[in-house]
Length: 421
Image (cartoon, rainbow, N blue to C red; front, side, top):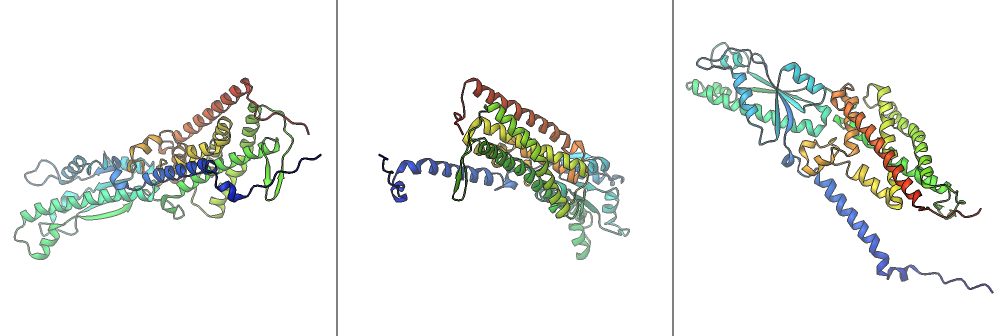
């Protein structure tokens, strides 16, 4: 006789089982807590966390020292600014004008403050009949370092320049006590602060954010592509069910060990990433008209960056199994976004994120993309380090992934026992 089918269980019955709630509730709550702390913790107080933001300080003043003084005003002003680190927020770099421009062009500084050649002469002339224009101090921005980073540098340099103006105003006011009210107002705040772009980027550069979003696309292409390939291979080999809507299928299990499965997945990742990386670049540059030069280099870099992420995903999935996707999400995205330095400068995030930035993949990749898009693909703009980290990351993925699968295979830890067709 055929045994009667077991009665179907109703949802309301299962809802009354506390154990059914426990694991999903704990994992979901933990994820919500970690995501909130990690994402908001990196951006909630950039001004408060800011320290040692690199800014160039240029003294080009060639004027003679004023009567009774050993140094001209440019030298005095530069020394005073360099001694005041804005409460530790700025790292002033005393450079020549050419050196400052080179560091702006390579993304090594977020901005610059320039004291022009005629500064002493123009200030001295204010107390004489030979005054023709207000003395000027120039602040230079670097939008290629991101809108927030450039803005923070601009705030620091502008504040320093205005403080210089007020200090000089006190000296001029004391030297000309009989000045009329109009002249007195001019002498009280005599320096004109002019803001200019030190290293311009294209109008289709998202105010310096296209580097971040392009990097994010490469990471997502590698991350999602790696998981899709992993799941697709497992389904095709009979190690996972295939369920689409109401249809469910299960293929016969192919006898293959973990090492050969990982080799298959990584080989497919290398091939399919060619397509995904190319489509990312075509979509951004060809269709959306994103500003980009060095296109062959950008394509090769895009492929290698996405491939390194994809291989890392395959290695993590092979090592951790079912929770591999969650682990790789934390490695490549959850911890990567706030420590990338692409939207909020690393000098303006808490120490924890600065520590993560030394090895988190997104930071390494974003430096290279930024160098290619904004800084003429210069190696010292971060591109050389990015290539090095891509090579190291790829090597680690290969070594870690195959070391784990070989260990599992030698222990006889089969994924599933093959079943006949």
